[in-house]
Image (cartoon, rainbow, N blue to C red; front, side):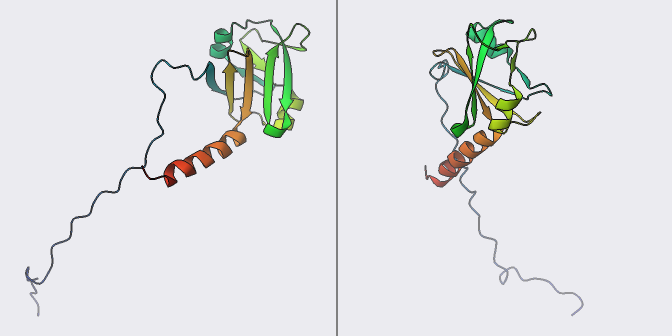
Length: 150
């Protein structure tokens, strides 16, 4: 049979395939809401442990030379930075925050690894979250989002 031809009556037409439903996206807060007075930024500590935080510092009214107290919340792996008259650290001249080596070590923050900075305006504090903490929290959130039917 050198010249075979398919007979259309014997070859069924392909069935239409429905497009899969897109994964639901999280709902964003209405425009203009400040998230309860919390502002966020992402930074990467340099070799000296400083992170640039211009927008957050300006929102809090923290200026270069302001003395700071840096504390670690080890159970939650977070660095809490608060203005303090007797603080051992200062806001840098280039509007950067110090993350002392001991604090970075206790929280597992390596040089160059992104951190999430949360400025809590009502409390006049900045909380620094290491990327591994954010990864865990978002993994759980994403698992719930993708598992829930909408």
